[in-house]
Length: 236
Image 1 (cartoon, rainbow, N blue to C red):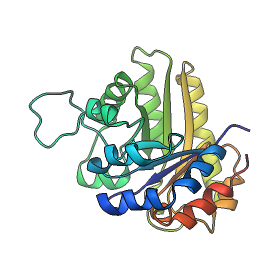
Image 2: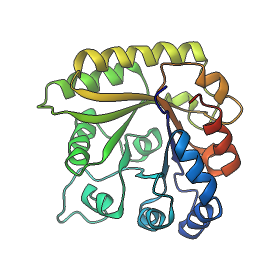
Image 3: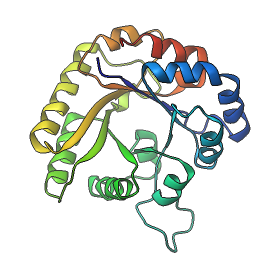
């Protein structure tokens, strides 16, 4: 079976020192977990480079967002080139919490997607409905596309920081997103994740939905033992 992708979105919960200490304390276990499934740690911007230096080589480091601008006079922005040079290989864009603070259109997310691809970073685009995913796929299909990797994370707003949706509903939406991606973006290697209320107590139930390629994990990823249980609950 193909490895699942587990993305630990730490949000603003682990400042620099605590993030590095967390990885250092669990180095061997992290290396072992990363042999079973693809493990991605997404700290805040300033922690990315430091984490990359001390994390096992098998653990991927991701970002929680990026600028829609290339290098230039954009005060306060973090360009994808800086993320790439810091060792980032994946990047979340369009997360529900980010959208609340800084609303971003589908067009803007697509612009960020191309910038990330240009810098050899895999975009993780968050969508809250299958209609939003359909719109994304439709607009991407109108662009000039080369063979690239893309991750779409289904992240229903009502499940962020709360209980997960019913597995039947998740399975239905995941299927619809996969159908649209395969139909409209046949040249793109697209994997579909689920995020929203994912934790160690419901992961076995969620993992039974075999069409899901992985999970975007929030608060449960802050506790190493909870993250370990999530990863080990997945079939190899």
